[in-house]
Amino acid sequence: MASKIRQIILNSLRINKDKIVFDDGEKFYTYSELDYYSEIICKYLYEVNNPSNSVVSIGTNDFFSLCVLVACIKSLHIYCPIDENNTENRIQNIVNVINPKIIFAHRVTDLKLEDYVVINYDDVFNKIILAQPYSNLFTDRQENYVYTIFTSGTTGTPKGVLISYENLNCFSEWFLSKEFGLEENDRILLQSTFAFDLSVMSWLPVLSMGKTLVVLSPKIAANYKKIQKWLQKVKFDLFISTPSFLKLIDLCTNFSLDNFSYLNKIILCGEELQKAMAKRILDTLPNVKLYNTYGPTECTVAVSGIEVTYDLLSYDSIPIGTIREGVEFIVDISNEELSIAGNMVSDGYINNFMATSSNFKKHNNYNLYKTGDKIYIDKKGYIFFKGRIDDQIKWNGYRIELREVESTIRKIDIVSDAAVIVTRNRDEEVNGMIAYLTLKNHTIEFNDYEVVYNMIKKLLPKYMLPKRIEIIDEMPLNNNKKIDRRALLAEKEFNN
Ligand code: AMP
Image (cartoon, rainbow, N blue to C red; front, side):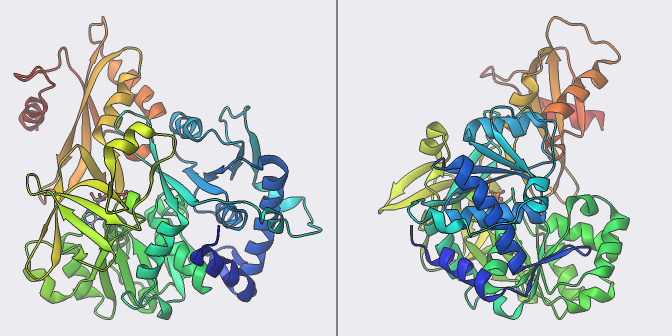
């Protein structure tokens, strides 16, 4: 299917051949290498996958995963990235939802993937010399969707948001417009893995405008000293991340490294930007433009944004943007919930009719998504984020449904029930979760904590792990005979 953004990316691969597209501080790759290796992946897709639609890529933000993404764009397959640092249980859950024919895995994993054709890094990078470009063999294919990104799901099964080429076109026309001035940036930080849609904010401008992705691998990002060293080595002029990650960079560098003199723009997305953090950046990095952007994965990365200047610090909180053309913000007056309608709103979740019909509706021929976010729009048109109406939280930039954590813990056979509460610091920022659980037919033994916590670790990815578990005799219930989370919170306060 013809798509403007797809044509722009394919064209950019052709005209930027000698430019560097990927630089992680150790290795770098050019656009022609990206073009070549993605052709090899197309060969596998042609021989093995055709005509199945979805292609799973298990990796991080490595070059191999980028090649799979580009191959999917070339050959019109749906790119389904999964973070290789997820637990086996979660990866398997996602693979089961997609049921692909072919899986690309950055390294050979211990996963049980016998039912699928698995191609790994070595297959693509070491062995093959191509006699012809394989992407030309897909000209008859039609595919509306470019990628699916999985978010936390209340039932314990992650939901894969389907993003179409039309959605991506719409996002790119706004994000690559003059508003953010990305034309002037050359080297753009890629901090998140491809499995998080924040990555689209980095790879989309890079691939469509022939720029360079400056890639911070999760291994380096997990260690303060390594981050410092890495930052001394690499340069970038556009920093894209969550506020939590920016805070981490501040902690390990005080923004005082020489390399920050190269930086001229910071774009934040994915969670609340606290006023203190905004002020800290404006004070410490006066030559850097700072933007706060907002949006759920279901509405293609971000739907609103604003440049943060000193005058915005006079508000109670930093606005998440202003009303813009082409996006309809509809606020339910009964509970302040925001629904978003327009071309950037997804058609729904892959192979999940139930979750799609409860979160998405039609509105004037457009898709509409009920965000679960509470907002307020003031007279000047500034939009302010006021929290959630449900049990979804953001912790270190990750979106987590408390119900998913609970239902996953309940799957452990000795657990009878589980309830998760959120803990916050003095600034009301989320700083963790505590899981309360009861056990089946069991008096509590001293080492139960360790046994159960080790089981939980096997089921939940690191970013979803409660910082503490409490095994209790009985779940407190309220008058409606539901778990009394207030009582659990009170218990937590008491024990503090
Ligand atoms: P995700 O789908 O992981 O991008 O998470 C989307 C959710 O993150 C939104 O529905 C909001 O709850 C939250 N979010 C994203 N950006 C912001 C922001 N700038 N300020 C406050 N919350 C945000």
